[in-house]
Image (cartoon, rainbow, N blue to C red; front, side, top):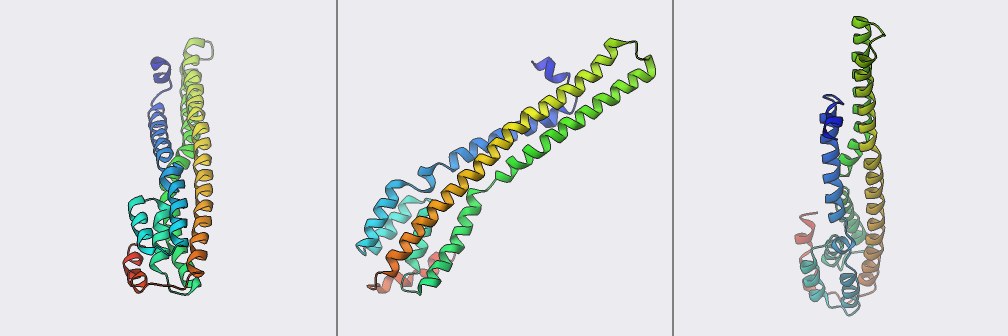
Length: 218
C-alpha cells in the first residue's frame, strides 16, 4: 500500500496531509458537539424547575457548575432579569450568536479539505499526463511500460483526492446539520427561560445587579 501511494508522486503528500487534518477536525467536532456537552438534559429539567420556583441564586449556581453552552444563555437571561422582554431577548440573541460561532468553529477547515482534495487529485492527474507526454516525445508511443508509469500516477492521485474529498464532504454536512439541530434546541430552551422570567414579577434586587458582569464577556 505504501509503495502504491508513493507511486502517486509528490502530490500525494498534500493529499495525505489534508486527510489527516480533516480526520482530526472531524473527531474534534464529534467530541465538542456531544449533546451532553452543549445541552445537558438534566440541566434543562433542573433549571426549569428552579426558575418556576423563582430560586434565582440556585439557578445561577447551577449555570456556573454546568459550564455548557445552554447554561451560559440562561445565565445571561437571569442577569438581565427585570429588564424589558425585548432587551432580554436581544441579550440572548447576542450570546446565542457567539455560542453558535463556537459550535461552528473549525467546521470550515473540514469544508476546505473537501474542496481542495479533488483539486489536488486533479493537479496530480495533470502532472502524470505531462510525464506521459514527455515519455511519448522522447521514446515514442511504442514503450508501453514507460507510458504506464505516468498514466498510473495520474489515476492514483485522482483516486486519492476523491477518497479524501468524499468523506470530508459527508463529515462537513454532518457537522453543519448537528450544529443546526443544537442551535434550534438552545433557542427552545432560551424561549422557555424568557417566558419564565417574563411571567415572574418578584425580581430580587441582587438579580439585576450582576447584569454588567454577565454582559462583559458577551
